[in-house]
Image 1: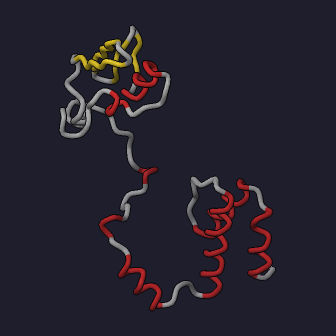
Image 2: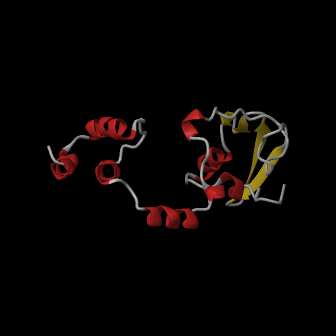
Image 3: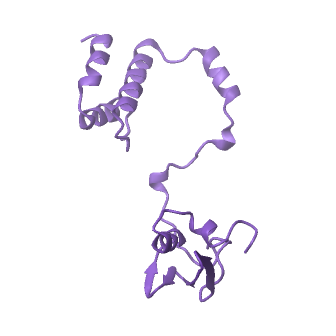
Length: 153
């Protein structure tokens, strides 16, 4: 089968099969489930393998445009989940045991800051956003709702 025939078959493939093909041509699995993206990436890789990739001029230009400081060095899959302790808590949050108050539509709301979440109305919430949603019925940024914007804490 020629390169063009192989590329022409890609859009008709299922996402599951495209993910397998991606792993085959890139020698690594992908977390992507976007069919169009997978088709484009696989087609590009097959063409690069067949025709030799980018020219030296294109590689040099890419190096000029790239700011290596902005590139991710460690892939997110290998990063351990972060456990929140008092040392790495968001600096906008007051210490556990503190009470955050907010008046909303004429009613005062008090939320207790816990070591791992927030307590309001005899319910524990993981985030301030969840508390704000419970109070307002809308999805709102919890830090903004409670006035805990950067530099105010």
